[in-house]
Length: 162
Ligand SMILES: [Zn+2]
Image (cartoon, rainbow, N blue to C red; front, side, top):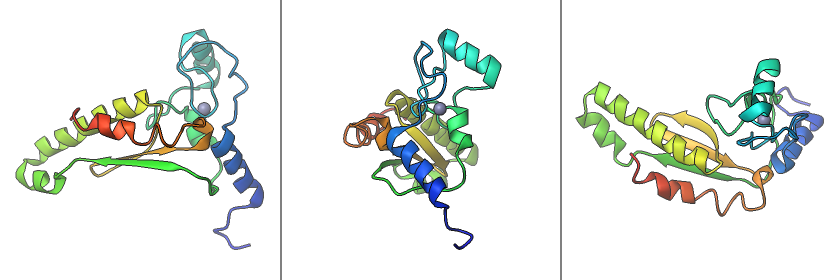
Protein backbone atom coordinates (compact mmCIF):
# COMPACT_ATOMS: atom_id res chain seq x y z
CA UNK A 1 0.00 0.00 0.00
CA UNK A 2 1.41 3.40 -0.97
CA UNK A 3 1.57 6.26 1.54
CA UNK A 4 -1.24 8.26 -0.14
CA UNK A 5 -3.69 5.35 -0.28
CA UNK A 6 -6.56 5.31 2.20
CA UNK A 7 -6.78 2.23 4.43
CA UNK A 8 -9.89 0.15 3.65
CA UNK A 9 -11.32 0.63 7.15
CA UNK A 10 -10.96 4.43 6.88
CA UNK A 11 -12.58 4.40 3.44
CA UNK A 12 -15.44 2.29 4.78
CA UNK A 13 -15.94 4.70 7.71
CA UNK A 14 -16.11 7.64 5.30
CA UNK A 15 -18.50 5.78 3.00
CA UNK A 16 -20.80 4.98 5.91
CA UNK A 17 -20.81 8.57 7.21
CA UNK A 18 -21.38 10.08 3.75
CA UNK A 19 -24.13 7.60 2.87
CA UNK A 20 -25.90 7.27 6.22
CA UNK A 21 -24.50 9.86 8.62
CA UNK A 22 -23.56 8.69 12.06
CA UNK A 23 -26.14 9.39 14.74
CA UNK A 24 -24.30 10.83 17.71
CA UNK A 25 -24.65 9.45 21.22
CA UNK A 26 -26.77 12.49 22.15
CA UNK A 27 -28.96 12.62 19.02
CA UNK A 28 -32.00 11.74 21.15
CA UNK A 29 -31.80 15.06 23.04
CA UNK A 30 -34.55 17.53 22.09
CA UNK A 31 -34.21 20.85 20.25
CA UNK A 32 -33.60 22.03 16.72
CA UNK A 33 -31.49 22.89 14.82
CA UNK A 34 -29.17 19.88 14.67
CA UNK A 35 -25.95 18.84 12.99
CA UNK A 36 -26.95 17.43 9.60
CA UNK A 37 -24.43 14.60 10.02
CA UNK A 38 -24.69 13.39 13.66
CA UNK A 39 -28.19 14.81 14.40
CA UNK A 40 -27.18 16.15 17.84
CA UNK A 41 -28.85 19.46 18.81
CA UNK A 42 -27.12 22.86 18.74
CA UNK A 43 -29.68 24.79 20.79
CA UNK A 44 -32.13 24.34 23.63
CA UNK A 45 -31.34 22.31 26.71
CA UNK A 46 -29.74 19.50 24.69
CA UNK A 47 -27.44 21.91 22.87
CA UNK A 48 -26.47 23.70 26.09
CA UNK A 49 -25.68 20.39 27.76
CA UNK A 50 -23.43 19.31 24.88
CA UNK A 51 -21.72 22.70 24.64
CA UNK A 52 -20.86 22.80 28.34
CA UNK A 53 -19.77 19.19 28.77
CA UNK A 54 -18.22 18.34 25.38
CA UNK A 55 -17.37 21.63 23.63
CA UNK A 56 -19.85 20.64 20.92
CA UNK A 57 -21.22 23.38 18.67
CA UNK A 58 -21.64 24.51 15.05
CA UNK A 59 -18.47 24.60 12.96
CA UNK A 60 -17.26 28.03 11.88
CA UNK A 61 -17.26 27.14 8.20
CA UNK A 62 -20.62 25.39 8.00
CA UNK A 63 -23.04 26.09 10.88
CA UNK A 64 -25.20 23.09 9.86
CA UNK A 65 -22.37 20.71 10.73
CA UNK A 66 -20.92 20.38 14.22
CA UNK A 67 -17.32 21.08 15.09
CA UNK A 68 -16.79 17.42 15.98
CA UNK A 69 -18.09 16.03 12.67
CA UNK A 70 -16.10 18.67 10.79
CA UNK A 71 -12.81 17.88 12.54
CA UNK A 72 -12.98 14.35 13.96
CA UNK A 73 -12.99 12.31 10.76
CA UNK A 74 -9.63 10.75 9.90
CA UNK A 75 -7.76 11.90 6.81
CA UNK A 76 -9.19 10.03 3.84
CA UNK A 77 -12.48 9.73 2.04
CA UNK A 78 -14.64 7.52 -0.14
CA UNK A 79 -16.27 7.74 -3.53
CA UNK A 80 -20.02 8.31 -3.22
CA UNK A 81 -22.68 9.88 -5.40
CA UNK A 82 -22.81 13.55 -4.45
CA UNK A 83 -23.87 16.97 -5.62
CA UNK A 84 -21.80 20.12 -5.35
CA UNK A 85 -22.91 23.74 -5.59
CA UNK A 86 -20.51 26.49 -6.63
CA UNK A 87 -21.46 30.16 -6.53
CA UNK A 88 -19.35 33.20 -7.25
CA UNK A 89 -19.70 36.89 -7.98
CA UNK A 90 -20.57 37.46 -11.63
CA UNK A 91 -18.06 39.81 -13.29
CA UNK A 92 -15.78 39.77 -10.27
CA UNK A 93 -12.58 40.18 -12.29
CA UNK A 94 -13.83 43.43 -13.81
CA UNK A 95 -15.22 44.57 -10.45
CA UNK A 96 -11.88 43.83 -8.80
CA UNK A 97 -10.17 46.05 -11.37
CA UNK A 98 -12.67 48.90 -10.98
CA UNK A 99 -13.23 49.02 -7.22
CA UNK A 100 -10.73 50.13 -4.59
CA UNK A 101 -9.37 47.05 -2.72
CA UNK A 102 -11.30 47.84 0.47
CA UNK A 103 -14.58 48.18 -1.44
CA UNK A 104 -13.97 44.93 -3.30
CA UNK A 105 -13.18 43.18 0.02
CA UNK A 106 -16.47 44.50 1.46
CA UNK A 107 -18.35 43.17 -1.57
CA UNK A 108 -16.74 39.72 -1.24
CA UNK A 109 -17.50 39.62 2.50
CA UNK A 110 -21.12 40.60 1.85
CA UNK A 111 -21.31 37.85 -0.79
CA UNK A 112 -19.99 35.28 1.71
CA UNK A 113 -22.36 36.48 4.45
CA UNK A 114 -25.53 36.55 2.33
CA UNK A 115 -24.75 33.34 0.43
CA UNK A 116 -23.91 31.49 3.65
CA UNK A 117 -27.28 32.51 5.15
CA UNK A 118 -29.13 31.08 2.13
CA UNK A 119 -27.07 27.89 2.11
CA UNK A 120 -27.46 27.32 5.86
CA UNK A 121 -31.23 27.82 5.58
CA UNK A 122 -31.23 25.19 2.79
CA UNK A 123 -29.42 22.70 5.07
CA UNK A 124 -26.27 22.85 2.96
CA UNK A 125 -22.85 21.66 4.07
CA UNK A 126 -20.58 24.60 3.23
CA UNK A 127 -17.21 23.20 2.24
CA UNK A 128 -15.05 26.08 1.07
CA UNK A 129 -14.79 29.84 0.72
CA UNK A 130 -12.09 30.52 -1.86
CA UNK A 131 -11.38 33.85 -3.53
CA UNK A 132 -14.87 35.05 -4.46
CA UNK A 133 -16.37 31.57 -4.60
CA UNK A 134 -18.36 29.46 -2.17
CA UNK A 135 -18.74 25.70 -2.43
CA UNK A 136 -21.35 23.51 -0.72
CA UNK A 137 -21.66 19.75 -0.82
CA UNK A 138 -24.69 17.49 -0.66
CA UNK A 139 -24.32 13.83 0.28
CA UNK A 140 -26.80 10.93 0.60
CA UNK A 141 -26.62 11.10 4.42
CA UNK A 142 -28.61 14.36 4.16
CA UNK A 143 -31.69 12.44 3.04
CA UNK A 144 -33.16 10.90 -0.12
CA UNK A 145 -33.74 14.26 -1.80
CA UNK A 146 -30.27 15.64 -1.11
CA UNK A 147 -29.31 16.17 -4.75
CA UNK A 148 -32.18 17.45 -6.87
CA UNK A 149 -33.82 19.68 -4.26
CA UNK A 150 -30.91 21.13 -2.38
CA UNK A 151 -28.22 21.61 -5.00
CA UNK A 152 -29.96 24.07 -7.31
CA UNK A 153 -32.48 26.07 -5.25
CA UNK A 154 -29.95 27.85 -3.04
CA UNK A 155 -28.06 28.94 -6.16
CA UNK A 156 -31.11 30.70 -7.56
CA UNK A 157 -31.95 32.24 -4.19
CA UNK A 158 -28.51 33.80 -3.79
CA UNK A 159 -28.64 35.64 -7.12
CA UNK A 160 -30.52 38.63 -5.76
CA UNK A 161 -29.14 38.87 -2.22
CA UNK A 162 -25.74 40.43 -2.87
ZN1 LIG B 1 -22.13 16.46 14.03
